[in-house]
Length: 351
Image (cartoon, rainbow, N blue to C red; front, side, top):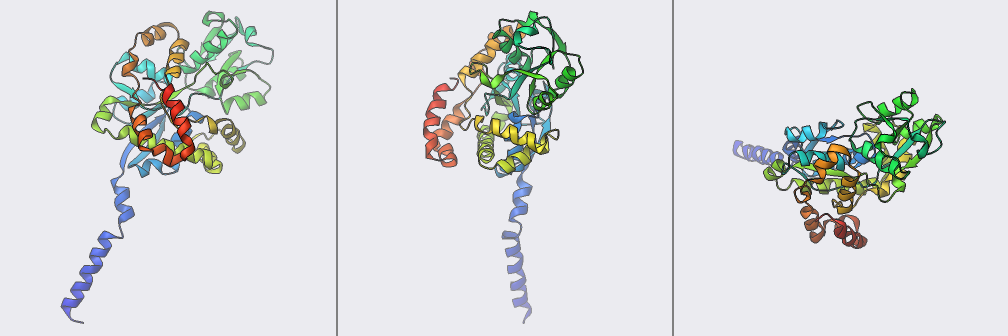
């Protein structure tokens, strides 16, 4: 074989290698590294867990590091530019947005109900019996505190009728406060309330049983990030919608993904959470007007004054979801039966 022919063969091999072999490598290399904050190890964060483990962030061009941080950590993550999104509680999002109007925007909401249980000591028989008792909260004014006020109000109790014990961090610390006798009652998420219930403590009320009490989460972004990348809301909404579909259709994968990020949960815990939560996720994730209004009503003290003076028109932007509905994204993902839900949720959206 002459040298010219060998050269042509070698060249053809090199070109083929460049065009074909490194496809997966070039896709991986193109991924943009970033963070997404999840503020609670609970079902509320499940779409983030599955979007990461199922490859849906990667599908839309992001190599996401899921970082845990409760309270104000999520807002700090996105305002510093270290992350692109926090799955914020509605309360936290409204508080942060009212402090810096125009800086933040909620572009979707995957959950409006939460697995919270009002847990109390063995000698307490009802919510009315909590009058004068010690109640553990992470921080006065945070989301679980406001949910607690809404539950207390059902029995005509107010914030002044209980003694607030602040313990910081998350539901685990609140559970410890209850089981060590530092507090007489607290509000817990699953699976923490499962474990406390197994020890003989009483469930006085479950948040999900009340249609007028919302425990909403929102996809919170900075407007600066959206200006820099106008496709960002669409990318995140699509990735999480695909994750929600996977959750609802693949219990085994959903449970496995959950346990990776909540290592305190047993297999039985995760399966029980799944059975209680899987159908609560919003397939058409509009930020709902009723959820925003209920959150504002549930807010208390100085926080309430600040939030209620806030112009909600700067808070949420449902236009990306409107467009995805019009383009048929959700219908293609979930099937034609989703049309009625699209119509229903569109009417509930904050406008």
